[in-house]
Image (cartoon, rainbow over all chains, first blue to last red; front, side, top):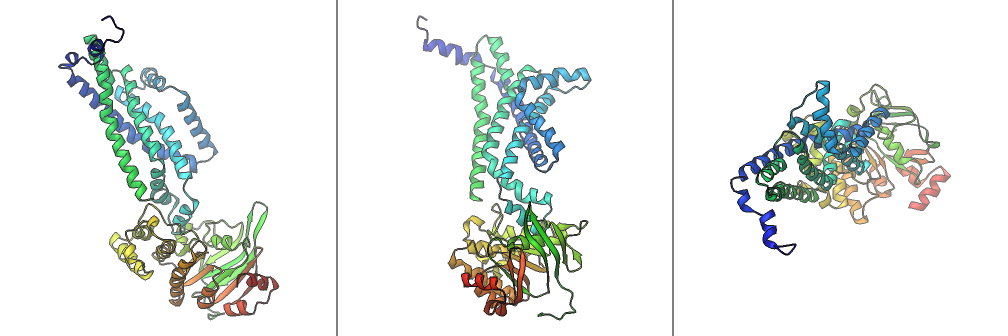
Length: 229
Length: 249
């Protein structure tokens, strides 16, 4: 105990498996909640982001101003602030969301703005001849987006998209301020009870359990997309 | 001139103007094209050939003038342009195949999504068309895996799948390596022989001699010459045409 970095002390503080005995169940149920929030938020923010990008490309001056305002708002506002406003602020207007709903709404709202920008630049990167060819075949604008532009944009923005998806998983941790026991909250509960930070360290490893499969999934998508380009 | 004058023209263009900002690209073009005609459009670069052909299906929006496709006014404000375009095929200089779809899927897309044909029907037609352009073994290839000439042949098959009444070709061979030009021209010649109405922006003199019935020469946005191919090429009446042909022959 005389050295500042005693290896046994570090192990006792951060990797204390005795502390974890009987506590894995809570951490895994927290992990499950994190997965649920993340999956819903990833799907919804990707869909909303796509919609935002198309509105930006096809919209008029008014919708553009609105959407630029929305984007700037999301850029400027810390996501925790947005969550506090939705969960603790909106009830004053008699608008009440459950913790789960609040978390999903805020994450989707903020990340859809970024994903929308990514899709917009992806669609703009596609050669104009692609739209012309589609329309010369009689495809409507909507069909051109659906069958020609969006599938190609997906391939272009996949690396950006996978960053955003990773960001969403990390941002689920803002739920610790709500009455919702996701992974980080579960770890905090155990750490406080046992007066030992080991559960927090374990939670970081559990985040990897989601992030690694996501990375493998997007890498596979990218490889498949590369083949088709 | 090749058809009986009583027959309703497939395409009639009246006073077509196109400006890009202040630049007057097409100057009040008027012409008529009949069913079965194969019309070549020639002219120096920048003369408005591509703009002209792109105005016909309004991929480029004309500034003024009228375009009639049979009885339908293409330029009519209330017409559904997507519906009109189904019957006007277009082949582009850079092929413009959809890179995320196989050759077969490229050809099947419009028939299934626009004409709502069944997948099985569309596939049968698509395979027959691939065979027609000599690429039946490339059905499952992606555009990237095909040579330029092969891509352009798939693009022609893609247009044919909609069963168009007229085909527009915008410099279909000018992005190709010389050794691939012939395979594309062969397909075009066979289409012409089958009676397909075609408008072809091209300087391929062999194709024009072999397959086209009529040549329009466009210079500075105006049609300065319009006549049977051999006459325009062997014996042009306009000095500009002579100069121009002198450079490319």
